[in-house]
Length: 314
View 1 (cartoon, rainbow, N blue to C red):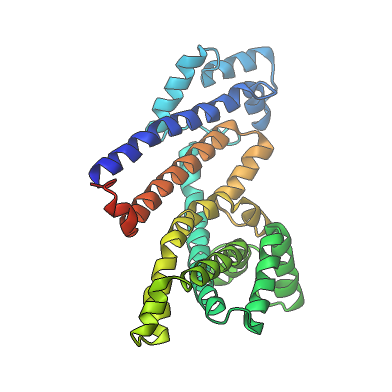
View 2: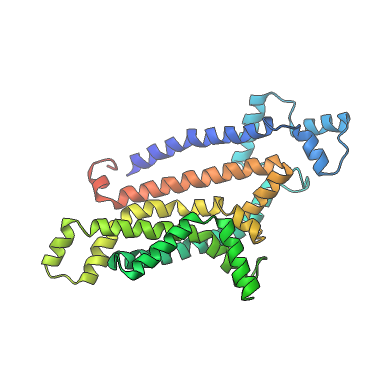
């Protein structure tokens, strides 16, 4: 087990370095001078003297590789500099401030996705080709085809404007969490219902199912203890990457519902050309994806007996 973990950790290093380099290139490939952008965002006249002073403050006159390694060293210590919009605020402090709402939204969406997709996926496999299965499959088709921003607008119109049941924006109460959670998780629910259903139907045709039935085991035991467990091996890999996808893909939902999370912070940074915030967001999301992928790979290797027995984890 340990050699495999070490190999996977070593593979993460060049990936993260490459992504950090791409994120750092952002400020160098910008169509306008970052120093001038920072001055204009703080309502300071961008005179040649002011621009040169700001370039000195941002270190833009230093050689490229010197700036990159300095930025990488500071990023390793969670120092991403100061926001162009709010020069008195550290970028990392802004990221931490917005992280809690985003994690709350991502975790609640993940729990909803896990419960609903698991229950409906199992029921669709048990009652395959029934009326219930056809109705759920129609909803799956709608869920995978409908963009999240369109679903969010429909939820606002129906639950807030038409029924007047739930708030459309804000943060702090459980009512504010309902509509963003439904909007963000709907497409994942549709995807994993189909995934679990197809895996279970495939496993139901394997010989171990016929053997279990010949032994007189109850159908409930066969479905839950044998078919479902074997179907979850591949599902775990997909579900494990859902949390980083929910966090990284929440910016549209956060913007629609005025949710004060990382996604809304990123959109504001893009609109204001706040390059330090954008760089930090790219790097943090990359680390999150790589780490989650590492954890999922290790868990998948450990759970699958075929991978354990081939000596790869020895």
